[in-house]
Length: 98
Image 1: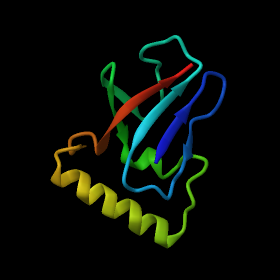
Image 2: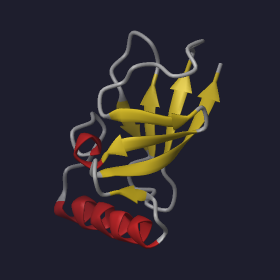
Image 3: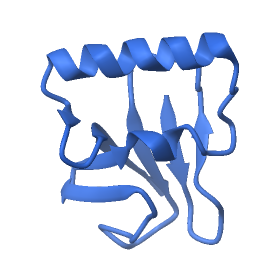
């Protein structure tokens, strides 16, 4: 699952059925840490993405099956320490694409 961002475009969800990976893809931006709604940079390579924000992104299927798969992904991430309970966010790697 990819949270995709390019300047001048709305963030969107790409590959929403891939519950095995989660990343923020920054395309065509020279900013190392652009201000994005629901996203907090931990460092240049990692972010916290608000779990509720993911379910509001364009590209999210919205089916009961998708929500069940997403919940399982969140539950698994929690066992790995990738959930920030204080902000209800999930950790994601940052991928930069020119």
